Image (cartoon, rainbow, N blue to C red; front, side, top):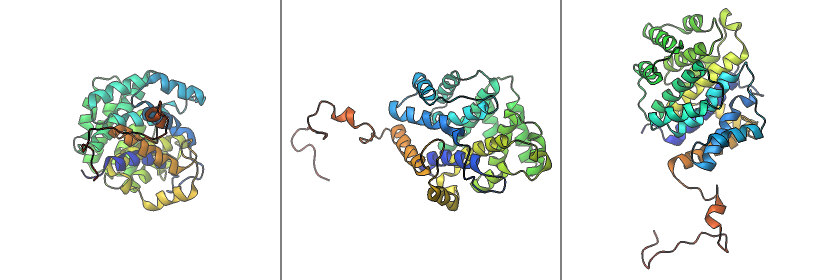
Length: 312
């Protein structure tokens, strides 16, 4: 395996956070768009506590924090919110699709949001299983989407054509940034990711670049959306080791809130706990009561036949 699962899980979350936090000149905003991924954090906590997808628990957590989706940012928030599902079920494409479609039912029934979510999640699943081939990713993704009335398959095919022609960033921006549509955001993110497959830094800098006059008309939210999706894709593929160390150090030194968490380091700890639950490694510190309930002492006692348990 090229990179460990924990490296790729961390890379996905950190990549999405960084991609949505970068300014057009490559600097990390001191006050990022905090609740862009807040629903993703709540979903991750739900999966950690329950070990499975529970829609009622997701809804309850959102209602408890009074999270509301504004009309102008609902699409990107939903896609970022589904990242925990993409990671948790990445090994099984059938379960991945089923659980994504189940989760999407708690929000608006938008075919474009559905296809965008499926496309991003499927690319992440291929990256985590080390089956991502840049030459076949887009055809495979379109096949995963199935028959659909949306324009996302056509936009993705256009991305493949641009990549095949060696088209530069300005040409891709002319194609996809002229209108602020989610399908264009998805297409642009795939272009930035695939055109700089092994370079996380360059991928997200391309996604947030606004040197073109046509791009300057785009809103900050559109740039954050493209950056966040590109960051998640590239982070899943390159792992946390592919993310520039100076960016990571800067976030740790600032110790500023990340997606509603108290600090960036808390995001890393949450990701580690998430990987532990996904892998089946039970952390006693996460749920100590379940193991000590009914015991007079707060210690876990293990019994076995004589000489079965031996020192190592």
